[in-house]
Image (cartoon, rainbow, N blue to C red; front, side):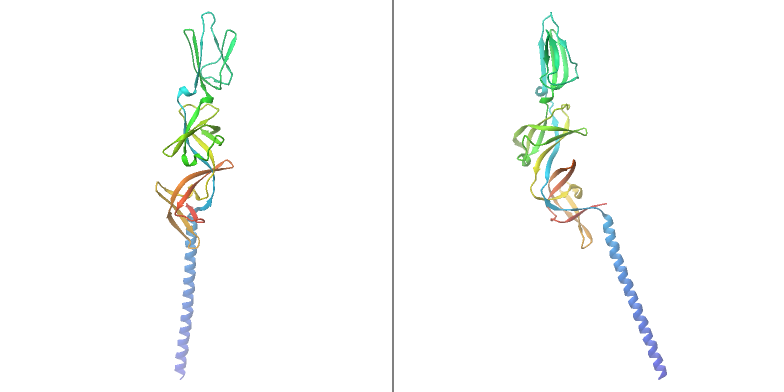
Amino acid sequence: MKARKIVYIIIMIIVVIGLGAGVVILLKREQNVNSENATGETNILEQINVIYTAHYSSIHSVYSDFGEVTSNEEEYIDTYILEYDNETHPSVKVEAGQEIEKQQTLYEYKNKAYASDSPGIVTEIKDKNNVLEIRVLNFEKQYIEFLVPYKFYSNINYASKVVIQEDGKETDGKIIQLGYVVNNDMVSIKIGFDKYIMPGRKVNVSIDIGNTKEMLILPVQAVFGVDSDRYCYVYDEEAESIERVTVTLGDIYTEISDGNEFQYYEILSGLSDGDKVVELK
């Protein structure tokens, strides 16, 4: 009887020890799972550089592109010609390459001064066979040929704000002629300005086109790929995952705020309002 009791007690001790060991193992397993989940979430967050949110909005937009300063001399060169006799020779008051103001004296002849009709640069002076010829590049006749998408044309008028950028410097421009012919969905307009820019140069032009329609937008930095293969990385906070999603893009829009430029894509498909989109490290 005593022997049976001892065996029973030994068995109970073994069972208790076994249950205790099992509980310890389960607790350790749970700790490991929690640790792995936390590590996985940390690893995902470590991949993220910036989080953006796709959202519906209207943008006060500016259309920017390159335009070319006209190089047709017939359009911007003024020629001043004087035929004189042998008795009196004109006195030239300017030099080739000199920048002049409006109504600045070009030459004097027989006690009379002859002035420029506009500001500009003297490009050439000829004095031969009793004929004086002074050629002036007229700043007021210079213009930039600029193409605007037809869909923005109704947003533009002669009072629209225009900014010209050349070599990192900005100058105000003005629309001097609106085109009335559509070619490949683009309309040509002419931009005037009041400083010297070398003919034939390509310069950046920005035109205020007002508020856009309400649309789903996303900063350009959050969109990757080229041509028709464009995609984003969408972050799911609940699933703690990042998924590559193909998107269809509309136009690109530029917004200027406090002197800073921000560019956005219109998202036509692939994303929904409120989606978290990330830029990875």
